[in-house]
Image 1 (cartoon, helix red, strand yellow):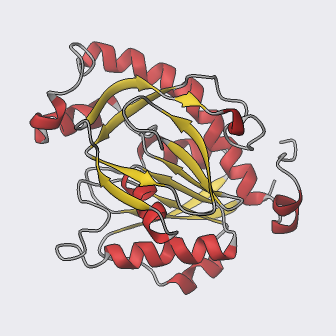
Image 2: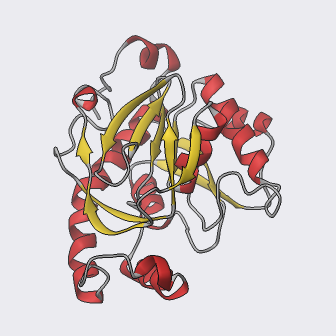
Length: 250
């Protein structure tokens, strides 16, 4: 497989691409990482095989305080129009939803925080990224907002009791994950320290260092193969992505 180039947008320094970047690189991707407010124009996508957008502490529509959010949404909209593979995490997922015609709002039940599970929907069974996942994969949750209405072209892939729209696909290859898979224990502990009100909603013990170490080892076993499949998707010609839900063998 030829090496693929991916543009990675980090809206905030507190939410780096982290282990996800390591997994993508190990699978054969070359990452160009940019951090807000330096957001490339949509025309920059001509040079890339995929787009990755990470999380951050701001809201997806907080344009007054962060005017560059409109640039990220424009980038995501262009990627969807081009049928370029997208992987959008947490805030990135909300930005993708907003860019494609969905709606984002605060979580009705309050922040969703902790080492939790999501449940695959039946529609994910033949999806290139989600099909091989366990029925209830482990994920790390740390968010105040959620996607309350999916974009018109979206396919729901996973849900949780607190937030229905945990993972979805827009079009044929733009993926949104409301949860985190890229974190390290230190990242989560930093979030808990800087956002104590949200962290207090986690169940007892879920943000303890020892628990986070064990949890992240299991997280890698589940989600590193998904990163590998995303690299393969990015390397697959557009005509083949349109014609089948299966990916070529590595």
